[in-house]
Length: 475
Image (cartoon, rainbow, N blue to C red):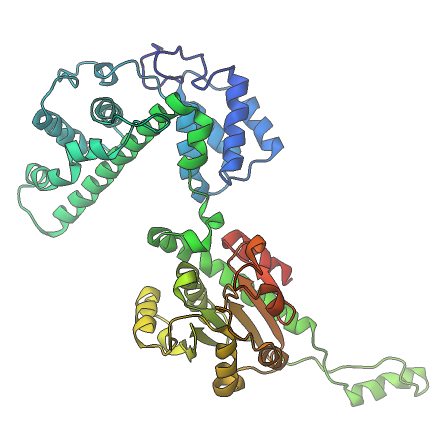
């Protein structure tokens, strides 16, 4: 295979057998596995050794074969694959020796000297084809080489995606491409065509971003760019820093956790109860021991119908966490016999009515934000919230109820009302508090984490992985 062939492994100006990051293939393998772990992907020592063994039986000159060998041995979940692919492209970049040479053989357009309208015509042709066509990614690499470099101050990166996308503007080509693809606009054919073009444009944008990262890695070092290029897997994303798009992905993680949480709480209740004495069966059993009741017989306990009360902080300081907790609330509504949900900022209101089965959860959150009475002055006041809850909704708690408090325990230096919280927790069968802040930040500033934690056991819950661990502790 020629070093200029996109399928080879290496870097610009390097032979395929030379690591793009310097050192031997073993060094690159070790660095790649380390980068995966630093990005939050769970890779054990044994799995790293399995991947190394796989290198001995695959064709190292075929880059995609190498990628799939690593993925088969190191990737455990579909949500981990995007981060894996990003790091693989950094540690095992495709070989590119020049701008024009990135195009497949037979390409007549000179990408170095062609005018922008000509480049846009060529891009439109590629976008109307197969999104997996290597020519599209080759064109993206050439476009980065021509448009992606900006003059930057010393110590700052000089390659960017936005000037490439601004120069070629693939989204503005959609109308032209639809006219070329369809005899008649409208209806299902146009929807299908638009979906295909959206996938192709997204593929092109990802290819541009990948090549920008590769070029920055060559200038600044792959280890440096690897630390910032990959978002953690969805189950390890910090609730306080997720984006709206990532919240959509979290919805798929919530429902299985809600089922497990309901199961765990039900098990705790069942193990905590014993049936009442069955007098008749005990007397009957004592006949075999001369009338001495050596063995008591109990009636089987009545099946417990789990009930849950959720009290969640909806203030701006934990806005993304409150979105997640409301997603969890919505999912738990389907698992428990009775769920009552309450939201608060500096006063509290029941929001159960917004989460009816069958409703869209995001619509429910929007209605809650508009209609729920949860704010007086807009500054979180846990003490006032607990007192108002005790006045208005104490009947929501009972011997069958688990109380789940979700919030950062930051009360803007207001009175904590610990006695009121203790009384509320005593009314419930179990009480738990999930805090989205790192434990190292508890008790800093206006945090009352330890004070509240002495009344209700408090658990750090910054991501889905920690929530899953909390659910497991309930077993």
